[in-house]
Length: 410
Image (cartoon, rainbow, N blue to C red):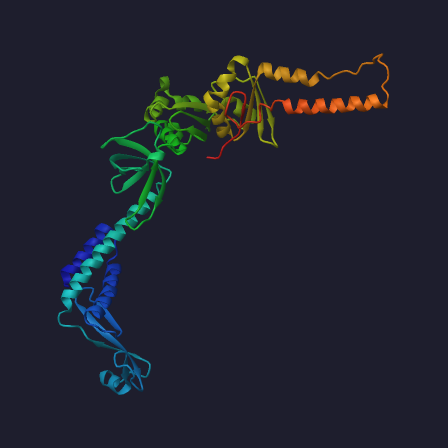
């Protein structure tokens, strides 16, 4: 190695951001292993590279002792004093043992070390760049696909988009441009691995941030997102300024802003509702586009009992319970939906109590009483066996008869 090698290290430090001193120390450590391997030496050695000229020297390190047991590691005090009279017992004596052809070995080792360190540094830089972009949106180009993933070129790294993280019916071809959401970034032996998603609720949130300047500037805030990718989504928005309508800002002039997001999500329907601190108003808005007559809140059980017009019941519940399910996920409340007629009927049944009447029938003797009691008990048991199950016994969102929705964790 020579001065040109040192100049090359200086250039690498400027271009790649890799410290020259770190590279030289790594080369010196590698040269120690190379020396012991090529010259079958078990002695302690130190390699020194001149920072200006690049000249390489190897020094054997020996401990000064009274009696030498291992000449590869120890030196007598008399021999040490010949090198320098100031050496005492226990001192370390360094003696140059640089082989004549060590320059070739040094050059090969230096090349390998520098190449490896450059690769590691680039991987580290890429990892740091993308780990800071977790939960952000990126645009990439589809390169290829295997049995489980699409491979998306993001410029400096090839990211993975699992088939399970694409929307139903969504297929990509080579060179298609795709917007995706970074879910996580991991280190691996082959470099950083970036995982993407097209179904994550965060993608919807980031798309609105791109399209709505008020959200990007912090005037309008997305408070909650509920999404069933490829089908329907709901977002709750609030404004920090009274004169700004958060729903109107997200919809845009003639719906252009929200339509851009819908097009990117391949036609996924999006409901934009205003967020309220009052749970009654919030739950009522979350069931949009259905109209709501009243909302009764049970704070302890986190249950909202909602009454809607008869003709709006199916709209409030949605296809396969989707609207009510998304509303529950958006608000964090368990939502029990009933039609106006059902609520009225339940209220009437609650006040319709049977009245006791006097009869002129003759009194029963003890035997008759026992017989009557036995007949009634049998009849009651049969009635219990035939009693239909409560319509609320099923799980939330299964059928129209089960109109209770529980919030689900994201």
